[in-house]
Every structure is written in structure tokens, then in C-alpha cells.
Amino acid sequence: MSLLHKLAFLVILLFPASWVLAEFQRGENGMVSSRSDIASEVGKDILAQGGNAIDAAVAVGFALAVTYPSAGNIGGGGFMVFRTAEGEVYTQDAREKAPLAASRDMFLDSNGEFDRQLSRNSLQATGVPGSVAGLLDALERFGTMSRAEVIAPAIKLAEEGFQLNADLANQFQNNLSTFQQYPASLQKFSNKGQAYVNGDLWQQPELAATLKLISANGRDGFYKGPVADNLVASMQANGGLITHEDLANYEPVWREPIHGNYRGYDVWSMPAPSSGGILLVQMLNMLEPYDLNELGWGSTETVHLMIEAQRRAYADRAEHLGDPDFYNVPTAMLTSKEYAQQRFSDFNPDAASSSEDIGAGSWPQESMQTTHYSIIDAKGNSVAVTTTLNASYGNKFVVPGAGFLLNNEMDDFSSKPNTANGFGLIGGVANEIQPSKRMLSSMTPTIITYEDKIFLVTGSPGGSTIINTVLQVVVNAIDHRMNIEDAVTSPRFHHQWQPDIVRYEVGAMTDQVVDELNSMGHKGLSRSRFSLGDANSIMLIENTLEGVSDPRNEGGVAGF
Ligand code: DON
Image (cartoon, rainbow, N blue to C red; front, side, top):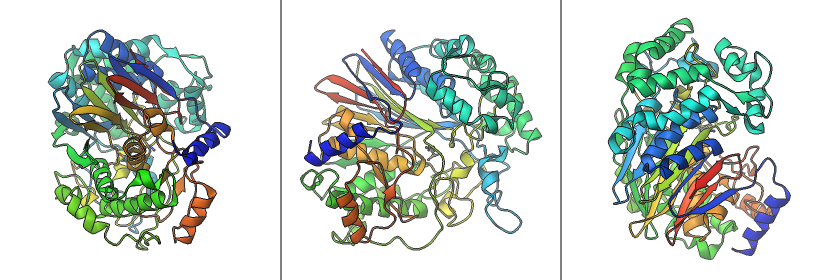
């Protein structure tokens, strides 16, 4: 570890902000790292019973819907990267889809202005949920245990309840006034209208009933029958668009993984409709010609190089990326070494380039509320899953009688050209709204191998910042040869082309580096109000699994 890096750690130790201690574990037989210690234990128990990584991933997915409701979900969507012990890699897209009744200009008012409220805080903001279909499909295809076995822990947690920790109790308290808008939301997240407090028992009987229907009837327990009836009734009563036909038609898609190679390591990640894998590989390709280890972690040269890679990749995101079923995404071009070389040929080591002055981007005001979990089993199967409701608690609407939150993922579409969404991201035709189309994502569940052996399983929440968080974990691990704890804990920075500003966590760069970057022409360098990402990750080092739950937030790693 360089002196600079040690200093950065010292800063974190002295000024921990809201960070909690990194949870770190070693094990030989299996490891689960997630945002919820209870959910990680659920996954570990499944592995200990002889289940494989997919069995555990499905159990953790359902458990997170109970124990981490701001992002764990059955009313949202997500992505999964799965690598078998034999080395085959599969990626599953369980992203939400626009309802059939959606249309390009549905979030524009009569003056053609983008209506942010409608696109984020309404039932029209909800995409057709994909999580249940995705998890069950993964289980059927690659699991070894029964649906009932892997959903049972989630049912038990919802039915019998669990003790709220301060993290969850505070979240519920902080959102109480928002939940008051909707009776079923208030009922679920408050104690008869009063705020829950740390240590209270929290039970979710309606969610338990929904999970039982899924356990008994499979996807039909969610996409048809009483749960679907309740969801559609909510839509009809509140101006939402999702119909029985939308629900019945929803299918997850297994897609060709994004594959890159970085300094001899193989990078496997999520293809479109996520931008994550493409941008990750594109940025790594741009950085590969430079010896980042030699230049040093946190040095002006390294940070400058990375910002410039980020700027170019995110600009391409806005132009070229959308749902590949609707738009011809130039994946091969964007992930090729030749393209990266050409795209980075105007890099100036002494000066910042300027993002074109278009689009009034704004910075995300939401805290981090997607969630990522990583799993490796005893045989060496590995799974990376990132799942979300989009904003924290989605659109905050709990479906009466069914007990789960709805997503507000429609805001991830580009509703109006060059107009920022909730993450300050802009886009155009590639990501415009069309019926049944999937909205572009930044989620980047990623598996890295070296000489056909697992090296790293990682991913993160954080909206537009996700890809840069994953990039920094990967560069820390590969270039700076950090162990998993340091790779995840080290402070991070973020640039996304538009708005043309750089945000960084305390310790990500020294004052001197900030001054030098300023004088090179980098704009808007400032400390981020929020921590960047929550990269619950696992590394395999000499046949030992090392897992960490990101200290930026609560969470747990469970290994054995
Ligand atoms: O799919 C996406 O890129 C976003 N809906 C993810 C949202 C997210 O990470 C929320 N956390 N800040």
C-alpha cells in the first residue's frame, strides 16, 4: 500500500461519517456478502445445506425483499451474472419493462416539459416487475433445491418478523411522511402510524402471504391470481398503466455476457439494457495502456486518466445505449480495444478535456438504494446480482393486500432528449420510452477470473455512479493489488460526462491532487454529499474466499 493510500485510510478512520466497520470474513466452503446480515445468513444456510450458488442467490433475493425493503424487492427488477465452476458464464436480464400502454412522451406536460414528479413519484413511474420471474427462472435452470425450500426463509422472516436495527428503523422514520400518502405503505412501515424504533419486532403478514403464493404457484403466484389482481387494481385506481396482460407477458431474458480482458484478467459483466458491463470494459480498455500501479493510487495522473476515461464512456452511454431488443446497440464496437484506443487518442496528460456543453444535468439527490450481493459456493460457482426499485423504496407505494413496494424504474428512460433523469443522466432515441421496452440501467454485476479461476465477484448500487464504483474496485484489486477489504473500502470518485463535475469521497484525493486537477481544467471538483456505492464483494485468493460487506453501509458477510 502506498503512503498516500495509507494516509487516505487514516482520514477515513478519523472521520468515519456514517460508515460502519467493514465486515470481513474468510472461508473455504462458501461466502455470501449482501446489504443485510440476515439475508447473508440465509444464503449461507442454503449453501451449508448443500445448495449451490444459484439456490443461495434466489434465497437471498427473496430474503432481501423482506429484510432490506428500500431496494430488495419483488416489485422491481435486476440483473444476474452467473459463472459455473466449469467456466460457463450466463447473464440474466430481469429488468422491468415499460407497460404496453406506455408512450414516448408520457412524462411530458402540455408544454412539452419533463414532469419529474410523474416520472418518479407516481404509479405511471412503475415498470412491469421482473424480479420474481427472474429469480424463479434462474432457480429452474441452474438451481438444485425446490422453490419452497429457497423461499421458506423469506416467508418465515416476513411472517414471524425480525428485530429492526437502527439502520432500518431510521429509514422508516425518515420516510414516514412519504409513506403517509398511501395507507398500505403507512401500515407496513409504521407501528399503527407511529415510527418504529430500533429493536422493534417487524412483521409483514401481507408480504408473507404473497411469498406463500409464489412458493406454491411459481411465477403465476405473482403475475396472475390475487397478487396480480391487487396490483392491477392499484394501477387502475391511481392512474398507473400496468395491466394483467403486461404481467402475464413478462419474461426474463438470458443474454450474451459482456466479456473483456484487462491485463490478463477476464471480465464478465452485464450487457444492455444495462450500460454497466459495456462501460466497465470500455473504461478498462482505455486505461490498460497506462501503468496505474506505477502512477500510484490517488495520484493526479491516475485520477486524471480515470476521469477522462469516465467522461468518454458516459458520453457514449448517452448516445448509443438502450434496450438491444429495440435499438441496435454497438456492443462489439464499444467494447473493442481498437475503439478504446481511438476514443482515447485525444487524451491530454496535462489538461482536462471539456464535456460538450449540452444538457442541464443535475446530481442525484437520492441516497444509495439499489443493492448488490455476491456469492461463491464450495464448487466454485459464483453469482453477482444487483437488484433495485430505482429510488429508495421505489415510488413508495405498497400494493394493498399484497404487501410489496412498486418500483419507479420508468425514470431510467430518457423521457426528453438531453434532459436529466434522477441521476443526472441524459440520453436520446436509444433510450426513449416505447411499449414493452426495458429502460437503460447502470447496474454492473461483475465476475472477474484469472486463468479460468474466480478472482473477484462484485457490483454496487448508486445509480449513475455504479459503474465507476465497480471500475475502482476492479482497478484497486488488479492494478493496485489490494486485498478485497482495501479494494472496497478505499475512497472513490465519480465523473459522468454531464454534468461536467467530479465528486469524490473524503480521502479519495488529497488537497494537492484537487488543486492540480483544478489547474488542469477539471471542473466542479467537490466532496460528495453521499458515500459512493456499496460494493459487497468476494475475492478468491489461493483457494481462500475473502468476503467484505462495504463499510459505507450496514450489511453482512457470511462464510464458512
Ligand atoms: O438501473 C439503474 O441504473 C438505476 N435504476 C439504479 C438505481 C440505484 O442504483 C439507486 N441508488 N442510488
